[in-house]
Amino acid sequence: LLLPLLKPDASVYVCCDWRSSPVIGMTLKDYFRLQNRITWQREKGRGAQRNWKNGMEDIWFATRTDDYTFHVDAVKVRRRVRAPYRADGRPKDWEETPDGKFRNTCPSNFWDDISVPYWSMPENTAHPTQKPEKLLAKLILASSDPGGIVLDPFAGSGSTAVTAKKLGRRFVAIERSEQYCAWAEKRLELAETNPAIQGYADGVFWERNAGRLPR
Image 1 (spheres, rainbow, N blue to C red):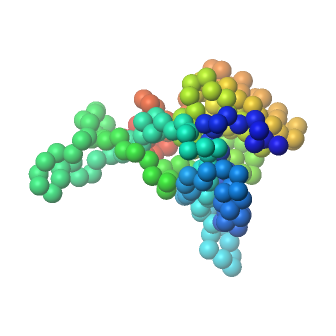
Image 2: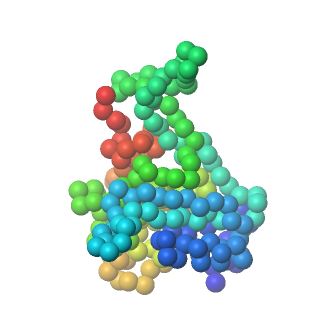
């Protein structure tokens, strides 16, 4: 139903667990150009007594055509430099700041710098599968332009819509639960006065959710 609504340069991201990931990947190949699979390592995993604790989620990245939007410079990750010099003694490309030495790196398809929203974070809700705004910000910044439209057909507590609004994008959010819609509306109101995204500052994503790292 949604496929005809997408622009030729549109991108699609589908979040899933290990059970559904293989099927979703194969299904996407029938309708889109499959570009990559992102693996997100959550800091908190779901507990298990007779199995390994599930601490990973997959995010499939697909596009309508091979002519798609992707702004890699908008999603650089700022990491602390622990070895500021190369083996031959030449300095690496790092920046000196009051908080230490940092360098901006291109993101890989393995994300271990994003935690699940917890109770003390302003974005946290009781939604069971809520995604962090920092995670969604990476997807939105990479695959859309300012003023572009972001569609979430399973809006939940509104994380995608809220993040899109904070980043200057328009959004369309679809959700059947009245409770979740109420949460989303409240979060959108709060975004009017608080556009901050945990872990995203100065146009880069910091390697920890606390923003600038201490010395």
